[in-house]
Length: 392
Ligand SMILES: Cc1cc2nc3c(=O)[nH]c(=O)nc-3n(C[C@H](O)[C@H](O)[C@H](O)COP(=O)(O)OP(=O)(O)OC[C@H]3O[C@@H](n4cnc5c(N)ncnc54)[C@H](O)[C@@H]3O)c2cc1C
Image (cartoon, rainbow, N blue to C red):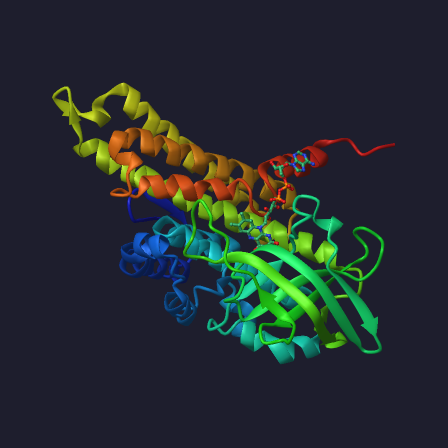
């Protein structure tokens, strides 16, 4: 069933329940998020109460519905949860990205945790009340994430962790931190994954970075100063942390792609409305071919990026390999968002360059999507490796 919801966006859903979920998400986005987004971004106010409302609606933890209700029929396909993320991001990218980071932070425990770990922490992280942070990057290791130096020393049944993680979304406001830490000397095989509750002694946070956009969401340093954890906090095996981190990032890249499509769609929505109203040379500017073709190119890039992330999501839903398509989705959607938001500013003319209209914010927000969860150069590395013939 192909449903039409909202302003000319076709939605791919197969059941009435999934269609209803998208309607709930769209209503929440329009009624609660869109009206306050610009204000909160200007003031750097994170919408914690709204995140809890999203949680209460079940939208914050949608990819884990089957686990929450312990019912296979409750499973929400990634095609649907990502379209929800797109709708939320269309109203306010910061909230969409918070959802995506929370999914990323939950994934290691859900996928690789033991029965005991799940019994202890799963209800908390999937309650809709809590927010997680995902800590891979460090000041000296971004694209080369496995060069991390934050390290754990084993002392009997405990690990003592020291080091600093950088650029962490939700730094200082998260309820738990999923942290990659060096436990051995081998570059990728010497990394382990730990679950760290926010109130653990030794966890300290830097002041939030002053960013180009997305300032409602704090991004900053997470210091681990003699953090002592029992081995119960180790997710997966010792040395398994890097594959765990990369598996989570594949899903995260689809979240970035869906968020990017939502942001690009918001820019197109605004450009269509403005260009239909603005009159020059005696006619609405959307009647000039130069403007109409810009709108057409935006719509084409957005539809292509949406189809690509949905294709990857369908593969994920059916347990097919989707890693390289996740990289393609993230690359094409974030490039589409950067171009669409830049073109929207152009269509608004001088007004586009002011804070009186949303498009300058959209353009600033788009840039980060080409950087996070693997820069777009790193996506090309992932894609080209998948294309290369195996050696020998
Ligand atoms: C707002 C924001 C939120 C973030 N949130 C998180 C988070 O929650 N958790 C987390 O762990 N990290 C987070 N990050 C960090 C992000 O993942 C890194 O910034 C990203 O991986 C790039 O690392 P870097 O900034 O150190 O750039 P570098 O790795 O120093 O790269 C600099 C430039 O060199 C290029 N480059 C590097 N290596 C290659 C190569 N092999 N081939 C071609 N070009 C290359 C890059 O593409 C880039 O253009 C966040 C960053 C930002 C800005």
